[in-house]
Image 1 (cartoon, rainbow, N blue to C red):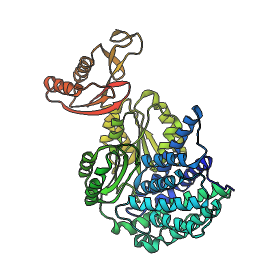
Image 2: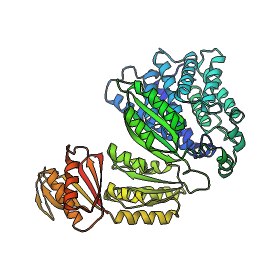
Image 3: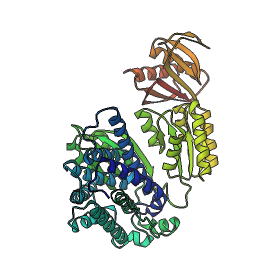
Image 4: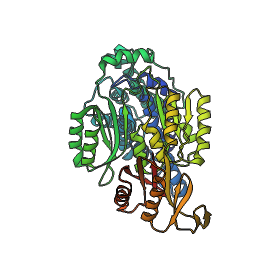
Length: 534
């Protein structure tokens, strides 16, 4: 048994908590009927804590390379865990849990040693932070569960870490059982609160770490997912989309943003890191229209990692689907996430692709590798997922512009196999071009090139060689459009110079006046320009 909670214990708690959430992910998804029955609370909590663990692992790697300093204490590592959870938080429950962790981290930061008394105070601070994050707190949710945990921890007035942790976990479990009495929609569906269940799993994991005992994690009785969601259908708010994003903004603008979004929808949660002159905020809201939310976000600061999910998407009885896309660059990532896709960074391992498939929580998943070398990795991940009971197909995209074309025709109303065929046909009909810098002297089909020269490639073959980015890009587009086309998609790289977009737009409009052109700031490395012609 531990007398104090140190950094090593925090690390084990995060890992054990993530393991528990993953083991009960589907159960929590099935419990999810409030605020809307989108069946994703378990998935969101897993993704949130996975982000927290990644932040801790990154910290460990940095510590291995340098002086560990005071890394034996719980405070610094707990703060890193909380920040990772906030930046990676998914969904309403994920954001609230990130604030529970932040509240605990704030208390641990000022503690010389974390014993029972500090844990009780941390849970009280966590409760205050969680309630403050929600625009309109509702009892019978994870808020009630964390409040009960704090009350139970404080009631025994002990400095024994194990006793306080057990008291908190026991009180949370009892509060979870009362949630149907507090929230009628839970009672009608015959379930307990999904987010509260997740918090109980995290507290049980904490008890295991400090006591060395294995906690019991019996699943709560529930109706079938179909029945629970059918009961809840009449209680839905009617808001059609979940919108979530990160926002770099001054604290002074947040109250105005909160008021604007509160008028637009519900389930509003806004939480911030509080770090630096311009803090990062995680914003979550359910709305009927997406545009006004984005406009309010842009007015408040710099929004990014914008995710939009139709709330009807995960209702029971539907074939829940997902897309996993390989891409890099903030702009490209935002584009794919806006299409509802999960993004994996370039050059992923089979394990990373497989983890993204399982984290999606979907029954049917399409993989878009966007690179010939990644195709084999995606195929291996698909075989593993199929063996585990999922339906997974690979659309052999070789460029992000082909993936954009494929996602544009995705239709969840048709059979999954037919949808994959349509996406593959759309990707195949999109010719792709790239402009990059030659890394060495070489002989190409367009002639010899020297290291440092710019190359324009069409469907993987070099067609243009030159020294000026604008000139090479123009010639590349002319070569691609010479074979016909109606729509051109351009994605500018991280180092694209100012004025490149305007110059290429002008060239296309003058030379190819009947072509429709779309241009995005992709921010991708290596490729100065990506081009697609459909």
